[in-house]
Image (tube, rainbow, N blue to C red; front, side):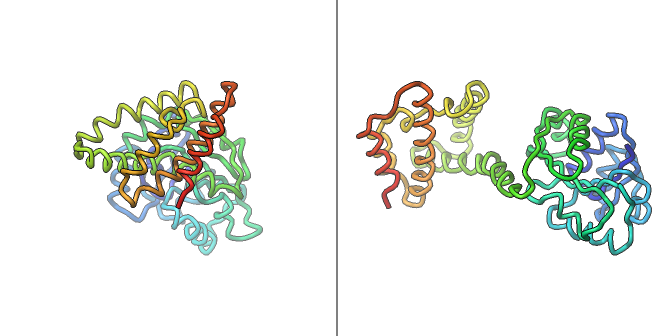
Length: 287
């Protein structure tokens, strides 16, 4: 396919590299930032185009700007009458549906969303881990999207457009909030005398071990710890000593852990003793 890129950020640049390697033709790129273009060109030696030059020259148009710019880019293309019938417009947002591109009811283009379910720190990092990355796909050309993801070395999953916000929320919880959980753990370690970088360094193997358990045995079996064991006294001790600002966070996570614990025990063919379960629920629900 002949494709163009609007927005030369990390994702747009990495997609251009991998699609070019897969045998597709990158016609060029359009970006407002000279620095981002210079970085793009260091990976893909293609010219910078005006929208009026780029859009008519491609079959597939990747809009890889920040989420807040995607709709306005589509509106600009319509306002400039840069409409190529049957052209495919693709954005890579995890929170916005593909329909955000359809700024007019009868727009004769096809709209698609391909969201890489990964956190890319740099172009080099993206190129290293793009193969094997999972993608959320939704839009009018899902089979075509699956083909593009395959060329990128990724794994595709079709998602429901009207529930895409929940899909994105799930990704945020798994990725961004993992860092938040680490920061809470570091804060608690500091209270116990293990400070800063030393605390994080000691926690990372534990976190990696849990990720390995999730990979090996899945949910809910990967859950371990006092709530999984039904250790009421340990949970009570945590709540007695926690800084007040963290108590509600601990309780909310604890109730979810209790749900997982019940599921894990059901799979194993037994249940929490009723008194133990009720005491845990009472501790974690109390205001």
